[in-house]
Image (cartoon, rainbow, N blue to C red):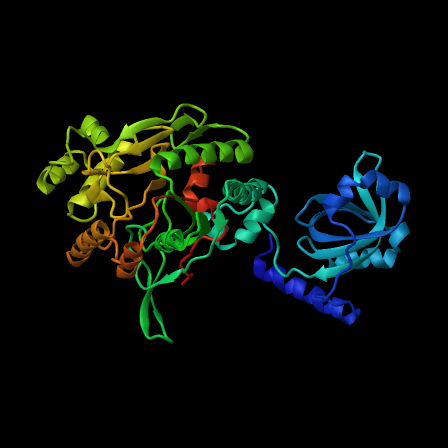
Length: 485
């Protein structure tokens, strides 16, 4: 088998031969009357008309020899067969095609439509025009690219030669379209908020830092989809807003985590977290039915049905049930001892980080669907306190397949309480907790002007990766890759 270097050298020679014949290997414009999908859906009428049409695409296969060739053409909408015959094209033209055109080239064909003796819809080519000369060969049809590193670096070839991968990304596009349509139908308005921030509000995560040259200012890539900005819009009088966009977290990678991904967040004025839970449950069921045409899934070793009753789990009670630890009264030493006993690795020695690690150990045992509520106030600096028990906040998490797949809460709109919680987060940052939240004092000032009671909720593309049971890296078109040495 020839190497890619040898194939490239041969194809460059073919390219030069084409130029000698006066045929541009990369013409500016290529004739195309119909997509291949349009050809297939209107084939009977095209066959009856017997009019010449022009179609174009990438050659995926060539078979036959001598007086007749069969070509499989693909344009991104469908595949279609082209038949090239010596007695139609002329021996010279057919020989040019045989000698100079390769699998992987983009070609425009003119011809009429007919059905072969084997019953296959086809075009009888009367002429062809090269649209793009490929210099490297495509992966072998039946095996594609096997190495994961190579697949991610050459995702264009992975998608081209693997219909399962292609179909997954078509499904992912539909996933976000269904989310967008659902929110629009519920009266939410799409907004765009900054991706560069002076402080990274809205989540607890390590940010990417950069520098704004014009302002000579340190800035950060956002870690949430504009939480503190969308709340400002609640104060501005917009009743319902949402945004779907990219967020960035300078943290580790895993099957469920990446540093860059798409998130959605909505904010709903005059609503509380119980109303948010009802809306979220409806949205997840809508996604399941409209995107996947089912509500029952198996993923990460868990089975669940989104049409089942969504049980309500109390955060501290579940941890105590599984570990015999009351996180409200436990000391850092108690938590550290239990985590060591359970062989749970954790980052940071603050109570917040250790409780979070303990919860992650517990949640993996729950298939869901479930809502987790009654989080301790020290675990969430942006949620409103529970009116009946101020030790807890009005927060909920969607728990599916042992993982948190969405978070919402009644937003804290008490400026004095918010200021105190930001001050606590600032102390955590000074103590070395890189995931603590940066205070945004201008946000506190907005709250002092007044923000209505609001429910906010957000989830990321991890939801999609769970429902297709793939690592999140696999469900990104172009995951970040280290440069080759």
